[in-house]
Image 1: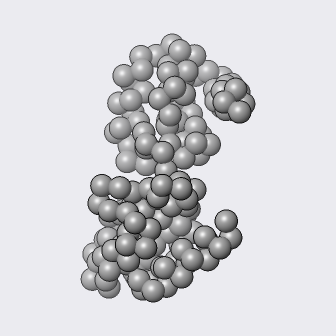
Image 2: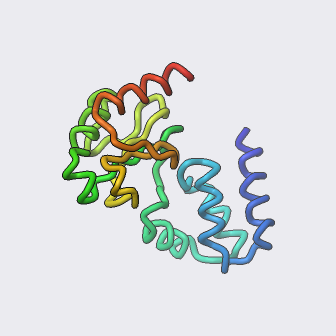
Length: 157
């Protein structure tokens, strides 16, 4: 299975002609595949592109959308922008954390199904409070409706 994943990274690099100018796009595709940027894959990219691993890490840590830690199958983003905050996004966040046994320091469930993150703005202020799950927007949320979505997703697993 791991060899298959190396072939995937190899394919991504080939798609971009092993050109280091496309580093961000390469990292985006690797993250789409793994849900984070595994260190061994970053080492492989550094070797193939003939660039220093520290440069890759500087790019990966500069951009907020990149993650160096594994994330769950379902990535839940809770908006805490002004409109969402005023319309009570924090109780939604707290309900999700409680239901999924997560905290401010623990973002991903042990079964690797769910990751809960906060974001400054999802750009859907008129629909506040808003969450996204794998980029699907859920508007006018309540703690109860958020938990119902989690129950539905669990039952589909």
